[in-house]
Image (tube, rainbow, N blue to C red; front, side, top):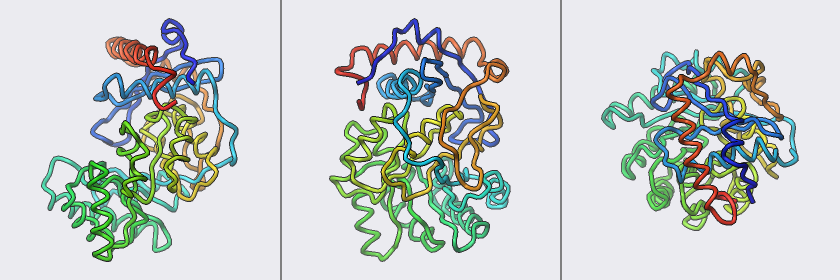
Length: 342
């Protein structure tokens, strides 16, 4: 059960930052986050701006867990991570992958909105082939569509992309029902692409439906949308499927929570999507959590006052985040017996 501090204590502990990205990612060029300093260390509250209070409250629960309770004991000291390739032109792929030293797995963003399916697919195939060229035949390539395809589009796209050799495709369609049908279609067509569920787990009222519907082969688990490390461990165990731990464009504080989850899992069969600190042009700690030899160390991340001051968000954005903090605190205060997912 979440031990929720008073709102006044959270406000006193809060620092709001705005960090530049190296490239546009998920439609943004800057990442804002509210950081919390508590008795157990630092926590992060950074739901994306379009999320409402009910969904965002889970992210607050995760930040409170990190800062006030800390994390479970780790089973490993380092976790393997994947490179993340935004929807860049194929010619830019080598430069992107160079920021992920030692990573032998790459997640490639596909199904970028704003263009026709035909145009986007051609660019996706070129980008994935460029990643394969850099990683070589022994490298592992996965794609993430962020639910951007219809069922028919997903079947066609994965038929084309699967020729390059994919480890899996993450959230190709929006609904679990569509993903279940897609799995059956791919099997009938002899397309050897596994499916991973992301949004269908972290944004679902019942994240365990993915296993019941046989909609995925892998589940992607993120700390913040599932209310914290301990609730995420419970979801991972209940799903009964192989788990990939991923991030949500976090600062090093949020990435440390992801690493804590990955370190606490009984098994970790896939590289984790926790190398996204390389997408930030600045961070809140002088020793950012960046891939070294394809892995991240497990341990706390401590924000530094000088960096918090240097990247302090404008006053109007600070006020916006404090209002969001209050609305999410209200959601958690009325939740019983604790925060969502606990």
